[in-house]
Length: 293
Image 1 (cartoon, rainbow, N blue to C red):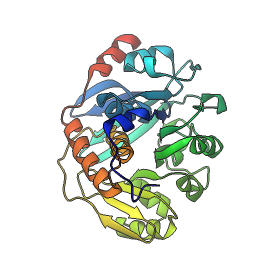
Image 2 (cartoon, rainbow, N blue to C red):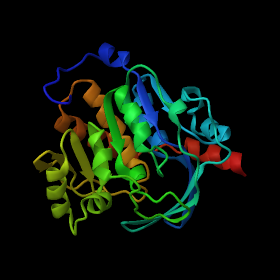
Image 3 (tube, helix red, strand yellow):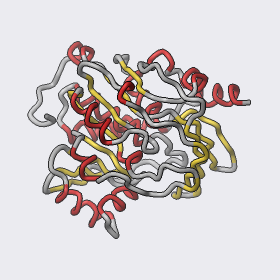
């Protein structure tokens, strides 16, 4: 599906619907001696590059109504259900390390929270809110299915965030045309001791599509069946990397929907993500803080 594609015109890309899945979150982000309260979640950060391009987006997500208002996503929310509380994270940065703690857990999405017709779909759960049975339904209605492994390998409970895979990971990966994971997730998924071993194991395990592996400011990789390539060298350092992988995923999907070849699509998306990180918007942060105080 992703190879040998012709470059599409912008008019053709605009014909596509972009459907994003995953629960919105409230994040307390600690770093550089300060605490910021922000709207977050893969669904929020993945919506940004699509909205920046003026493309039609549909959001399938659960959380309280006020949080969708704070994020600016209420007008794009396409499923009717809400929840009384969001998933809440405490995220602390110290140097290159990040510690995440789950303070609240929101409900899982259900079959009534799925689009009809065909979409270019981005599935970006944060904490197991999209089971494989729902993923199978989304796959059936997707021209391209992109996702992030994060929400499929995190324990769905309060406390310090831990890796735990309640479903067979290979089964999950097989649904996707493109899936993103960071280096620590790649080590967990591949049961590897280092990134080189993980890349080799992933290249042997993947049967279709591609995996994008990122490691902060270090090199990024594309993994395909039987091989992997290093895509970039050292990238700029930033303290707060929250949402970078989610933004990268959607930026890549836009290029793919425009007919750009996968390697070039990821390379362009990495550059676009770097630009975004250095001018990360904070408007949703201040609105969220006002609404919860």
